[in-house]
Image (cartoon, rainbow, N blue to C red; front, side, top):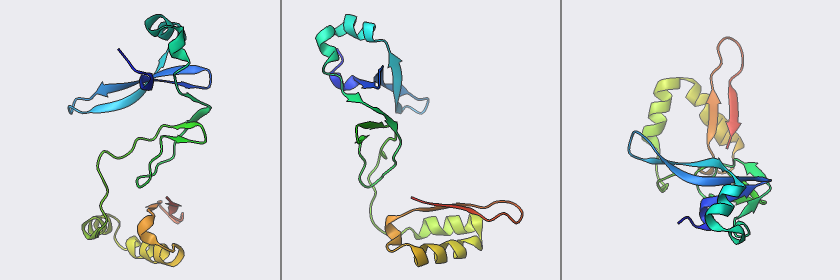
Length: 139
């Protein structure tokens, strides 16, 4: 039998939280739209009152302090399946520099100039063809 954590209500719609298997042998958490009458038939009408209710959906990625809800909105982002450890990321930076080459120097200067604590942020950039400036976003 399912528990109340298997269902949520967002706005006026009900969803069942399911673990869908993948070909790699892992599972992905999915929200499947569920009928209120089916829930009532399976668990009784008193069960509906125990289902957590949210005003809507949001997607706020945060790897260091993940929260499943923000201001009564259900966070559709999933936390990482592993723990982040503090330390050097030299090998990752070498790989990114290998891919993007000289633009890495520009990104390093920008991130060190404008971010007070660069180890707590992730600077994403994408190179655009031609004379269009690169896209950048700070997370």
